[in-house]
Image (tube, rainbow, N blue to C red):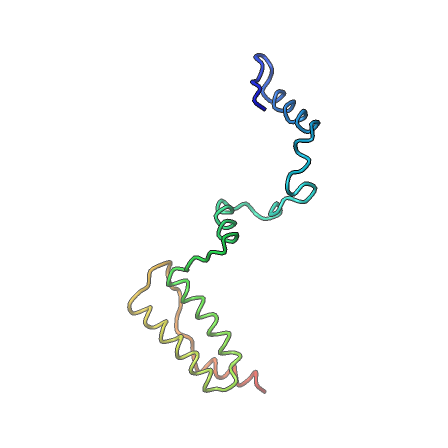
Amino acid sequence: MSDRKPPGMPFETWVDRQIREAMERGEFDDLPGTGKPIPGLDRPDDEMWWVKQKVRSEGLSMPLPPTLQLRKDAEEALRQAKGARTEAELRRIVGDINERIRKAIRTGLSGPPLNLMPYDVERLVSEWRENRR
């Protein structure tokens, strides 16, 4: 495709002709993915798709900002607390995450706003007892 567009020929016509001739020569026959759907075509537009794809393909992980990591840890702690085998285990799990939340509120963490308050231990214990019946 090193030919130059002839003067006076519309650009699109010239490009279309180049593609058609290459197809006739079979230059597109052995491309990877031929005959398969385009991956991700049904996903919503995302400007950072290529960065995310590169991170996945390289097996990399990026640490979350401290506030987001604490939110994630708090959700996991709540999940663990609800599945605790004993009341003492539930109180320990919730107490540990509450201490981290209180410290973050006092000292501040970098990242987006924390938007997290300590969990109500007694309410969680009450719910835990109800679910055990």
